[in-house]
Amino acid sequence: MPAQSAIVGIGQTQFSKKIGISEAAVAYQAIQNAVADAGLQMKDIDGLVRYSLDTNNEWQLAYNLGIPQLSYFAVAPGGGNAGANTIQLADLGIKGGLAKNIVVFRARNRGKQSSAGPGQFEGGRPWEKMATQVRETPKKFHNPYGLIAAVQEMAMIARRYMHEFGITYEHFGHVAITERAHAMRNPYAMMREPITMEDYLSARWIAEPLRLFDCCLETDGGAAVVVTSVERAKALKQKPAYILSTGNANVFMTVPGTNYFKPSLFSTESAAVAEMVYGRAGVKPKDVDAAMIYDAFTPRVLIGLEDFGFCKRGEGGDFVAEGNIAWPNGSIPTNTSGGSLSEIYLHGFNLITEAVRQIRGTSTSQVKDAEVVLVASGNFSPTSAFILGSQPS
Image 1 (cartoon, helix red, strand yellow):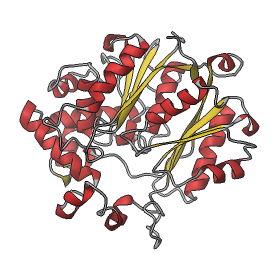
Image 2 (spheres, rainbow, N blue to C red; image 1 turned 180 degrees about the vertical axis):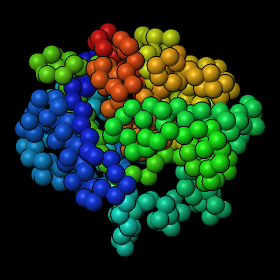
Image 3 (cartoon, rainbow, N blue to C red; image 1 turned 90 degrees about the vertical axis):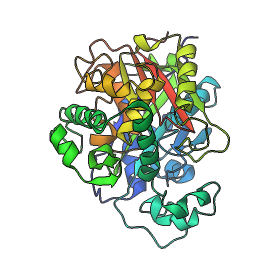
Image 4 (tube, rainbow, N blue to C red; image 1 turned 90 degrees about the horizontal axis):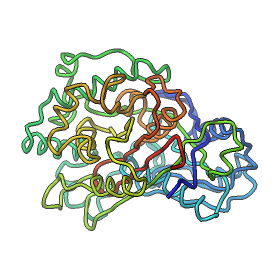
């Protein structure tokens, strides 16, 4: 089925370790920049989609941005594991005729200290409010025993991945080094100093087997996109990035972001979503020109490459070591802005804006004649993905 919606505007703020403004102000800047990029005005916006983790709410955004009326607003659950679901929600809103121009965004301010308030997201990092989460099922079964932050949860998966498939530290290192090389060409990326394998292997442990460069950045900043119909996109100033397909998946009884209760850690929801988005778009892995694969931690990229059919299960390490995700000569250049490891961590939203730049032909690591770009959220439940195209079908 031909695309019915397209991304027509992208915007971001500066990226910083301490941005010095409120999380609301971050959202306002990103949204204003995206709307201007699309050639629209705030009065044209009638839909909003955000992450459930975002502290900004719809009425505050509409009031302070001067949006006259919202006819559609929706919330995607979670963070990096379901980030692509924000685009699915916007796509559905456009397809259903519920709104004309929908803004999707993510704003973060992790630099400020945690507040004294009881709310889980009243500033600071969620892990600082863990006591309020232990009551939740199934967190109470593993939080008290040390599996608290996402890096600790991922470390368990990474160790099993190494054990089952012979993945090495160096395989993880190739992901970090490649994404840093991409970031070096991106003037907005937070980390632009090159790293070597020696640098990677000598870095401190965060949660074994994951080292410093295996982990995403803790940063402040925001980004936004504008989604509209294919027909309306024709009259706007930017080249549309057509939404060819979307998909998401969840599984009963799971710790979000893990696969602990499945018979195999590597029977992932991403593999199920891959079948959805490829089938709905009418494309295959060989048709994809660039991939934006959620990279809060390096093992997620290797597993994601396998999930989406760029290599077989267990072959992700060698696939990356052979240079296949590197721009410009890799078979599937991946996270070409530097991603969450070297550009900024926005729960994967910066991967969405980079995918649009690839379709537009404006990336700092531009894949020649990019026509089909995959964006995939975290591998484990809940998860989501979508495919962008340079043409509506």
